Length: 259
Ligand SMILES: Nc1ncnc2c1ncn2[C@@H]1O[C@H](COP(=O)(O)OP(=O)(O)O)[C@@H](O)[C@H]1O
Ligand SMILES: O=C(O)[C@H](O)[C@@H](O)[C@H](O)[C@H](O)COP(=O)(O)O
Image (cartoon, rainbow, N blue to C red; front, side, top):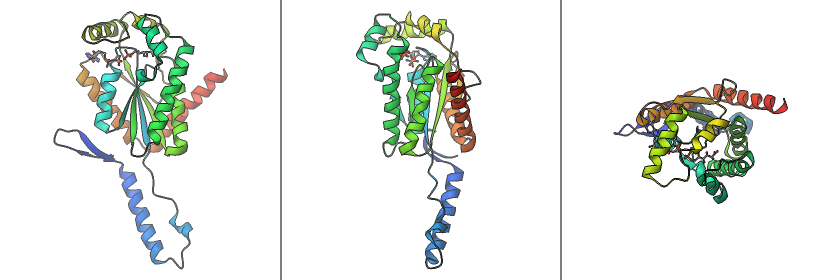
């Protein structure tokens, strides 16, 4: 991956070396084909220029783990579109959570559907290189719902890679952070709701190889930095490896769904 930084150290642009090499060789090939137009068929042009993939980074974890703070930072650093998952909740869902009632699977169905569509629409919008999304994604089945965005968006947008960055912290720590946040801003999610999220939380394991985990019992700046590093490392992975991880997650999904 080639990156260009401004004076403050922020990434201003990035591209993969293989992308550059591919397009140089494509252009050389095309010039050669142009000069021998009579002898060469259009088939000689082989493939169209290699498109860089688009990325979906889903920053996940229970309330208070730092999803919004971290996702905004990663989106800024990569110059990707930021999507706040909470904005996709219905008024009813927000009122329910605000009243201290945990959501059910059924309540979350519509939310995940709206969020997935928002991701797909964003990627299909010209000029967007990728998006960074917040979503608690507490259960494997919820993560699977969002994983479907990759294939849906690929139909129009080209190659799409989806990766979870899961922020991991203890219940006590997150309750404390939600409590503190509640003193500073008016947020519908109250600290006592964190316990209900931990009750249903299914931490991703090695059967979901498209998940990177970061511990949040460290200062926010360090978590942000680690998340940007993870996102950059994922983008630096050979495309085949990234896609294999995706396919493994999808296959594991198929296995659990049929069992
Ligand atoms: N690593 C951290 N260290 C200290 N405070 C944090 C950390 N991560 C998040 N916070 C604080 O905790 C609160 C919850 O963070 P937020 O980004 O809103 O989390 P989420 O979107 O997951 O609910 C905010 O007030 C934020 O400033
Ligand atoms: O699945 C759920 O229980 C909710 O959707 C949950 O994810 C909620 O929306 C956020 O946790 C609240 O917002 P914060 O995460 O920003 O606190």
